[in-house]
Image (tube, rainbow, N blue to C red):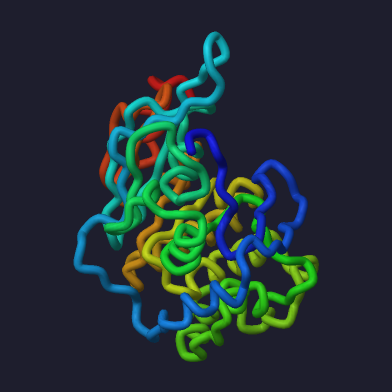
Length: 292
C-alpha cells in the first residue's frame, strides 16, 4: 500500500490548496452501504468528550517518494502525539514534511512504514471503506482553498458531511455552531456571495458540525487578509477553549501558530523542536534557525 494516496473524506474531492477550483462530488462508496454502517452514530448537543488524552499520533512514521537517485524522504521516523482538547500547530520550512505529516495522520495518504492513529484506531489496518467511514465520523478538515460546493448555500455546505452520511443535522448543535461563526444572516448565500473570511467560516463550521474527534487545518488563513485571518484564528482558538475541540494547524505563519497551545517544528522530515504557549517573537527566532 506504500505510496498510494487515498480519497478525501465525505465522498467529495477537495482541490489542492494551490488552486481555486471547486471540489468535485464523487461516489467513492456505495451510498447505501455507507448509510447502513453510519446510522448508529448520533450527535448530541454537547462538545465531544473522550477518555484517552491523545487524539492522534504517529509512530516511526516514514514517507518516501520516488526511488534511487530520485528518492525523497518527506517523513523520516516521526514520532509525535497531539493532545485532546488542544490547538496544536506544525511549523517548518517549505519541503519540511509538515503537510505530508498532516495528510498521513488524517488518513488522506499512506505511510511507507510506521503507524498513524486516530484515537485508538490504527489507520494502516483499515480497509478503504472503514477508513472513509472513520474520516467521515471522526475527522474534520479545513483547507486553504475553502472547498465549498458553489451550487450549495452556506447552510447546505455546512451540513454536507451529514447529508452524504444519510443524516439530518442536530438542530440545536447546528444553531450553536452557526452562532459561533456568526453567519446567521448568510445561511442562504452561495459561496460567490460571501467574502473570503465568511467562506472560511463556513468551512470551519462544516468541520465542526459532526463534532469530530480531531480537525486538521492546512494553512487555513493562507488566502485571507490579516483581518479575516485573525478572525478565523480567534474562532479556532475559541472552539478549543469553549468546546474542547482538538485542532492541528499546519502553517508557516508565526502569527497563526502563536494562537496554539503547542508548536511542533519539522525540518527535513524530522521533529526537531517544540514550543508551548509560544509568542510570535519566539516562533520567529526558532524558524530562522530552520531556514524559513
